[in-house]
Length: 343
Image 1 (cartoon, rainbow, N blue to C red):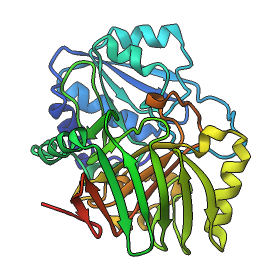
Image 2: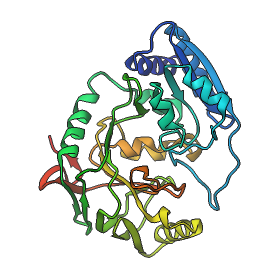
Image 3: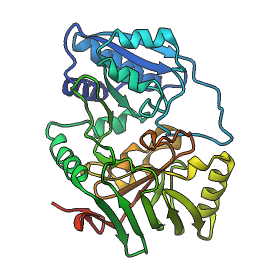
Image 4: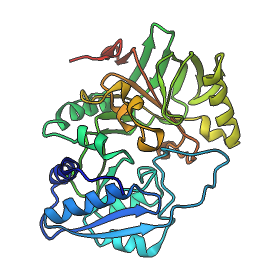
């Protein structure tokens, strides 16, 4: 196991305090054989320091089922409907999710939430990242305000000097905001936090999205070196244009799935965490980061393809792409202007 720093345990304790973990509370710590051992140990130590009663549920990591390497889907297959695991989770009022992929889009999550369990997904990051981005009192205020604005909006338009011109009908689209903790029964959050996203209804996203050099493909954990142009029609990427490795890898990766749903839009939104750093991918090996920090960088346009249960689409094919230097407008009013949050 990696070395243990006192500050890492303090960070876990602070996150759990914001989740209102109480003395004597039954808490499930969900892990799998490939989970980061130090994070599992830190979570249990912090829970015990708070007087909670943790029980660890560790499942075998599922064998690869995809035709390509898979990371960061948010749809862990580790539970696989296991009745014992679900019974243990259901007996607890708080779940610390330490699976590799996370349960955000896992098929078991709706039942877990319906039972009243609140869920904190701890992203599979090095604890140094979690400590630096530990949630703070007040982080929820601007995110909740952004959620309110996005829920009221009829249309989102995204543009950039690089050539992006994207039109998204947001009326009726489910909206979620994450600030790094959850304190209400039947809700889910992830840490690091600081994002607001909408899950567009089927057929409501059209236009052109230009991924410029320096934007990030988090499925590859790679800063783009050359522009890639995505044409999006009726909610699906229909063309991927560009020269060089970045466009070629995106085309090949999506083709390998053999699944039209992997080309569909999952969610759209923007980052709101002023402590999240754009250059963070450079400071850890790929195995030590899940890239959640890049999703939360303030002012990025967060574009994702793949699963969107609200549009009736389920697939493991998935891209999370923070796009920088865009302007995001809701009903004609900018919430992000040229990559910077509008106050």
